[in-house]
Structures are given as C-alpha cells and as structure tokens.
Length: 529
Image (tube, rainbow, N blue to C red):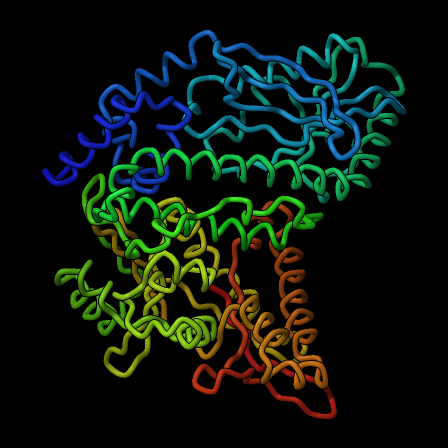
C-alpha cells in the first residue's frame, strides 16, 4: 500500500474514532471505498487496511441472537428470521412464506447476511434456525438454490440436510423450473409424501411471481434505507470540509462512488418485477455542497499489485495494450468519452464540454457516469474501454468463456432476420484499484438506451410509433434470449441474464440503423457482450 494511501487511511480511521462512529456507519464506508479492490489477486481484506476494524467486526458478531417475526399483513406476507447484535442492530435476515396445504410447508424466499459479516458462520446459523423451526412445526422446508455451482457456498444447503426436490418427487420437470431443494423432517415422511410434495412445489411455482414482487418491494425499501444511512455517515465524516467549501481527492472519490452506486441501483429497480416507485431514491436529498464537488470516478490508489491479461493474440491488440500500459491510469482516463446518445443529449443539456469539468451535479442530471466508457482508434480499428468495479471481474471472466460457446452454437442462425455476433473482451488491465476492459467498438448501443431514445426523443418518437421499432428490438432480443436458455439449459440462466445486447444504431446521426419495409423491421445484427 503506497504512502499516500496509508496517510489518507490513517486520517479516516482517526475520524472514525473522533466522531465515535458506529460499526454500521464505518463498514459501509469502507466497503464502498475499498470493497471493489478485494479481488482475486490479493488476499488483503479492505478491513485489514483500517487497524482495529476486523476486531470490531468480531466483537459485533460475538453474542448475536436470532429472532423470528410474524407477517405484518398487507404487502408484508413474510415470516422472518433476523440476526441481531446485543445492541439490537440487524446483521442478516431470512424471509419465508407459509403454505398449509396439501402439507405444511415453509418456502425460503431470500436469505442474506450483510456483506461485512459474511464468512463468520452467521449464514449457516440462520439456515439451521430455519431448519429447526420447520422440524418443530412438522413442516417441509423448501428453497430454490440460486447459488451458482462454481460458488464455494453452493453445497451449503446439501451440507445442512436439504435434498434436490426432483429426487424426492421423481419428476424431472421440477429441475427445469429451478434448483428446488427440500428438507423433510422424519415426522412428515409419509406414504403420500411424493404426491403431496409435488403439489406443494407446483403451488409455489405458480405463486413465484407474486412472491418475488413482494420480495423486490422489501429489498428496495431496505436498500434505500442503507443508502440514506451511508449518505448521512459521509456527511458526518467530511462535515469540516463541507462547511468550509473545501475538498480532497479522496473525499470527492467517496461521494462520487456513493452517487454512482445510487444511480446504478435506480436503473436496476426500474426494471424490477412489481416495482411501482412507491419507494424512491429521490427521498435522499443530496446537498448543494456535495453536488458542487468535482467528479472523481477513478481510484488514485488500490490494494494488491497491478496486472494485465490480453485475451486476443492479434499483434495489433498486443501493441494497443502496450501503448495503454505506458502510464495507463492517465492515458486511459484522458481518452475521449464514448459518444453515446445519452451523453450527447446530456452534454447539450448541461453545457459540459470537457470531462475534467464534470461535477457530481452533472452525473445526477445525466443519470449515469459518462467517464466509465471511453473510446480510441488504433491501427484502423475503433475500440471501447470500460472501467468496471472489481465485483464484475468474475462475471467478465465467465463471459469470456461463455461467449465463444454462443458463437459456435448460433453460427448461421437468424432471429427475425437478424444475425448474432459476439463481442468478447479483448484485454483487461488493473491499475491502482481500477479495472479496465477493452472491447472492439460496434455499430450499436445497449438495447435499453435504444428503447429509451425511441420512446423519449422528440425526433424519434413519431418514427417509432409508425414502425414499431422498439417492439421489433424487444421481440428479437427476447427470441435470442429464449434460444440461449433452451440451448444451454437452466443452469446457465445467470450467465444468460448477465449478457449485454447491443442493437444497430447510427451514433453520428443518433437514430436506429435498421431496415424498415413492408415486411416489417429488421435489425440486421445484434451484438452480445
């Protein structure tokens, strides 16, 4: 860890002590600032950087208790287990719903331990409480194991006594609908178990949509509360600078990181099943003093060593990576911003012409951080460079392996006249805690941005209404997604859901680059990232 980082960390740690900040204020700040850095090439935990914080976590976990709460009625139908500290703070929870017929059953909707307290046995403790509760009620305990098979915790449920549901009921159709598992106490094992359990499973499947809607609603409320608490903690931490109108790069980085995470969550919840906007991030008021802070999107220091990997053996790509590696942080962060439609319209609206003039207020108005995506030209080829958080590293590596499989299976196929092309990552660079992924630039934009432009741009709304371009794009991408799931099976669902689809777009003219004729709308090509 560099001397500058050590000094800044020491200053923040002193402020934690001086302000008597609680563990629930301290840990989210550390996670937000350094959590992305704790990736596969360093064993150093973000908490180890701050002396004494790991001990504080251990003391908090010691003496935890698990309590159960009944449903509150209305839109809160869950029975809940919560892990509480001696001081009453919640470290994790488990939501479940009850079904009385044909046999008593509790279905686990969601279980989570706060990220700061994972790896200390709390997850297993709350699952054991769920299992023991089902035994005491002479009920089956059901769940859908959504943990990826390559995750170290994938076998947690099996280790605690859960069995694959298809093995118990003898119906392979169950496996096609999810990874359902059941814990069946001896008191429930009767001659009719197989038939009754199958009925319960299909009953749960039928109600999954409504259950997920309630779960999404509860998750949004919890997360907004967490954002609100984190913002207040940051204001406390930097109250002195804010009162004087001063700032430091670290302070700007932390507030920028907070705002970009909040904006990312806003985009995700807009697509959630059942989300109505009842709980809104607009409830969090960002002060004018914070809005006026300079944007500091990239980290100036990081944990672990810097590294690179080139995933394309083309000599031109190798030369490009070498070019970027000469002072990579300054070279990459000084590249032109990727001129996507959102940015072009946003720049005109905010009159921000230079990316080094951007302030936090600008990304709040734009709704995204434009500095994460940049473009460059090298030896006759256009490229995109995306800055991502460390948490996306494993997803990117899985995509690198998955995309060529898609290319092999989908070669020559057409979907509503559109062909499919993959656009795998060409290289990856880690510098001072920042991760940069190199892609070839394509003649399109993200489908969500395309749909938004078609439905909101005054120049495009009329054309879209007349030709139904948005419907054609959705139908084409949905057809491709369905084929992906059929081809690779339900266990690839998470990988398919993590794919990004780009549709044809004329970036210079800011309009869809599609064919519209008497036969309908044809996209020509859809790119998968």
